[in-house]
Image 1 (cartoon, helix red, strand yellow):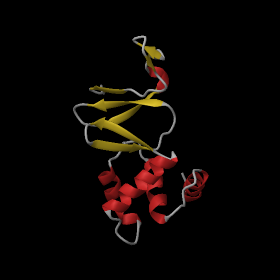
Image 2: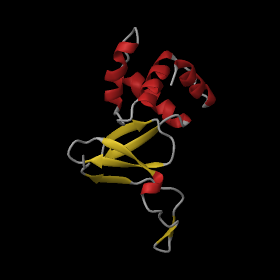
Image 3: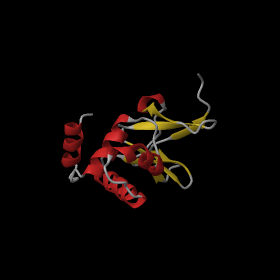
Image 4: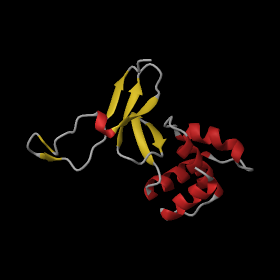
Length: 134
């Protein structure tokens, strides 16, 4: 996505396009590796004239998640990753490498919207764990 596209995306979600938000949103739009906040901080550090603090990265990610620009993906306890792909999809975690891949929504059989007769499912996303075959 171009800088104009990123700016338009942020504005369309009600987010003021600051330099930090633009750089982080652009990075996430271009990567498919589902990075952590620290991965993002390291990846974009050289793109800004002033060093970005961890707090700024976390606050920016929180703002983008709350606005619906990106989403959080939890693949393991205590570790949050970020994803700019906002279409419905699932995730696959390679247990050998830790790599996270998008799985098309249609690749996983549909779940019923009523489970065990007492749970009404509103939405779901499945994270699968295994080994990616080459």
